[in-house]
Length: 363
Image (cartoon, rainbow, N blue to C red; front, side):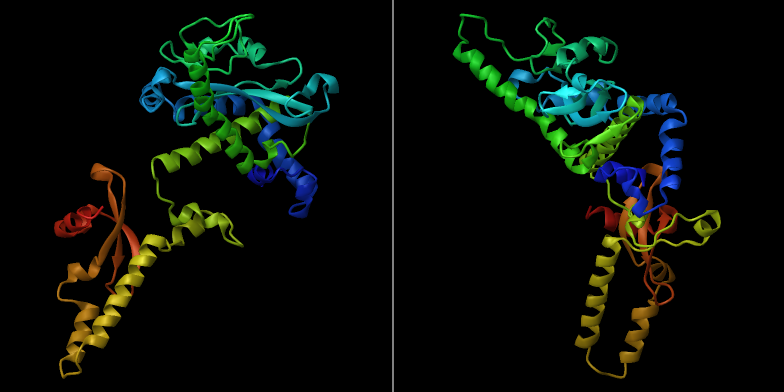
């Protein structure tokens, strides 16, 4: 329900459609307000340590345009529509939104993995340059990192920052400088695309939803939580991690999280790979059945299709997936021992070596 609020941008009062208002307020208070500093530190640590390392940033930077292969991080400000009950409305004015709002500085690597997020601040009095000075960025990046900025901070003259070439009064930019700025602007657009994806995923932070905030710390935690979830989404896509059946169970109508007793009796339903494999096998078996000539040996052939000649082949019909590495690797196999097909996870010790070799040839 807390995730639903972030994704749909609904208010606490709107949640009364699904749960009594007092009950949801208790959940919200317990999660966000019970110990906000601990939760904030937890999210900050996960952002900085789980998805982006110095090595991964430099490897990702190899895909940058030739002029910017030294750049490992992008930093930019993002404004969100806010009604902050504890602040002067004029101080919240955002020139981007033409309304009141909070601004945060978001730093992401070349894979658009958010590395850190600044504390939110009222938009009018905190431009990107001011926030850069307040956030102590030197304590957050490595000395081998290079951060791309939009040029809002005039005083930057360090090798750890990359920004467009500014035009001096009375002096025109050279053709080379113009090309540099054009390529830089295109290169910087990737963090803008991140903001667009985030706003479409978490409507709460879009420019169309107005958030009423009584605690600035709550907004900060919610924003960092959204960034962390976006990192997970990007990491799953980047590493091509398959979606298992239990990952999507909560999408189903009437789903409820099982207690310990229920977990002990649950069995795994086949995922899409298993279902397609079962369908293909059934069609092949059906074709073989109808192509088979009617003869006194038909019954024996039918028996062979069900029982087989070898107990081990009955036990492991076909390997369709695997997980883990080395000695921890498990295989998802279709069991056929009782005339039924059911996919289960089992270790390599329970499967013949020939089966494993055959499977590995085709992945």
